[in-house]
Amino acid sequence: MWMSAGSGASAELRRLLSTERPVLVPGAHDALSAMVIDNSGFSAVYCSGLGSALSLVGVPDVGLMTETETVFALRYIVDAVKVPVIGDGADGFGNAINTMRTVRDFIRAGVAGMHIDDQVAPSR
Image (cartoon, rainbow, N blue to C red; front, top):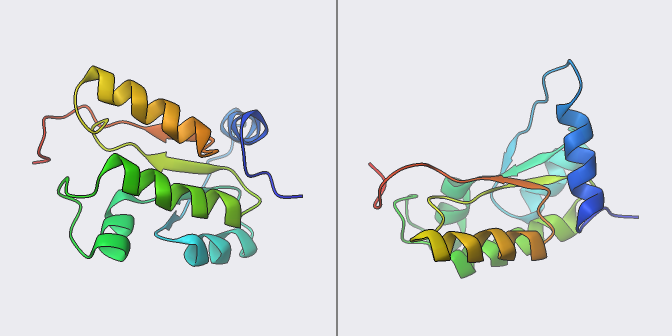
């Protein structure tokens, strides 16, 4: 059974991170690359903002990909693998309220963890 959503994936990611061993998490830009990572034996997949922007929109990661497009890509990646997925939350896609929406939407997409950059928009 695939782990695709919710607390199971988050619990597994927390378990991985609680060990004394480093966790190598390769970046994927779409469901196929995520499946290759998963089938290669890695414990988790990272959904790269740069990779997704280049793959989906054809632009560098300079803030042109929307929150909705990012969540869209994450859903496919989460559904394609058995391991936890870590998502790139960029700068939260706006102000504090946008960031709240981003976190909620990432959780609903089944992402096990995420990071949000502490930076001004657009990215430097």
